[in-house]
Length: 397
Image (cartoon, rainbow, N blue to C red; front, side):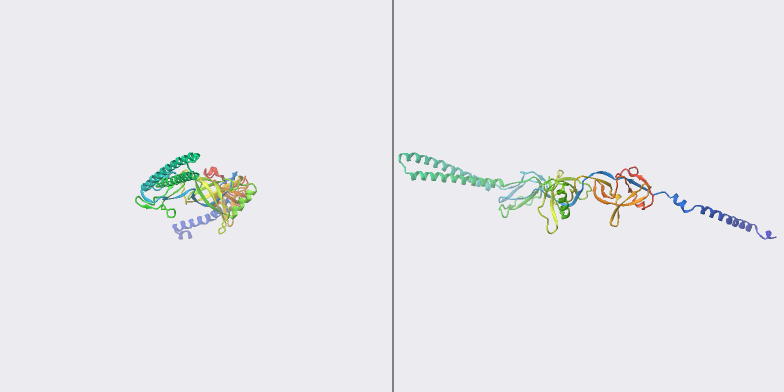
């Protein structure tokens, strides 16, 4: 009777409920069998690239900010007064010593030179006459035809005529110099500035107020000046006393130059000057190096970074600079131990050498250093290490 009171649809609902009740424990048992340990084992280990440190001979370099300046620089000024008749150079061009730059009207100086030439010829003629008169007086005194005073007078006249020749020669040379100075020529080779005086203008050639015409600076080689602090100077002096580094005062130590925007040195040179005292205001010592500028790409006044040799060659361990991390005030690298767990190793880094960072202390030659994937490592956790060269050909240590 009870079965009749239950409808067919109700029977199906009860059947589904019964199946659900039976299935729930089975599903629960299945989920319970997948414990946390099995889920953790299923997760792959973090993949990292590792590499052993590079061992090679390196040299430390001290780096400073420097400014280029010309080895030679000249302000070209007028040496005679007159009107400019010609400008013979192109603004900003390279000129050679002796090249014609300006022409100043030379006619008045040529006239003076011709006048001085005539005065010289007159003085020479007087010398010839004075010699003949002295010879006559010398021959007549033997016969007592003239007195000794006459001979003395003729001798004095000859000496006066010879002095007049010297004066005339000096006046002629001065006049010829004025004619020569009317052609303004480059005193040195280098790059010339713009012309400051145009054709038709009067220029003054006086020593106190000579007119500035242009300027020239030499280009190759070129000087670079820099300042080193007292700490670097004392360290280098100590290395020199110990025989570990030659002094730049008596040895042209090599330097490397990095122009603005460069990451690698593009020019090389050598030290050629150290000042004789430290600046009392800044506590720095001025140094200077001579740099090759064959391509004329460097201009006086330009700023650059200069590297000066700071040690003798020594053997060191090097790693990619990206492998060195910062932990507050410490520098660390991550080392993969034999069991593939990660250890943080405190190191003492040195300078960069050809893109690699010198590690002074904290590493051994056979340590496996994490060079890629630092963000995936945890101290004490295991990783899946792979050689850096196999993962990325550019990640060479």
